[in-house]
Amino acid sequence: MATTNPLQFIQQVRAEVTKIVWPTRREVMLTTIMVFIMATLTAIFFAFVDVGLKAALKMMLTYFA
Image (cartoon, rainbow, N blue to C red):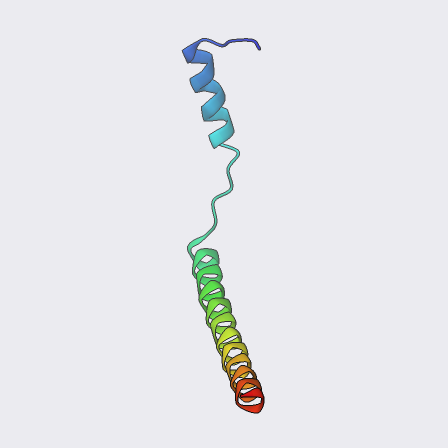
């Protein structure tokens, strides 16, 4: 592997940093809100699944006991 001197490395890093496209404040806010919405919906879904499994297991245990 070829080695580069520190000056070349810093120049290459600066060149790569200029290629970065940073998201706008609006894009960050929208994606953050969407993450919170999806996390909430997922939590609600798994809460219902948990309640349903608990009820089914309880019914099975009372039936066989």
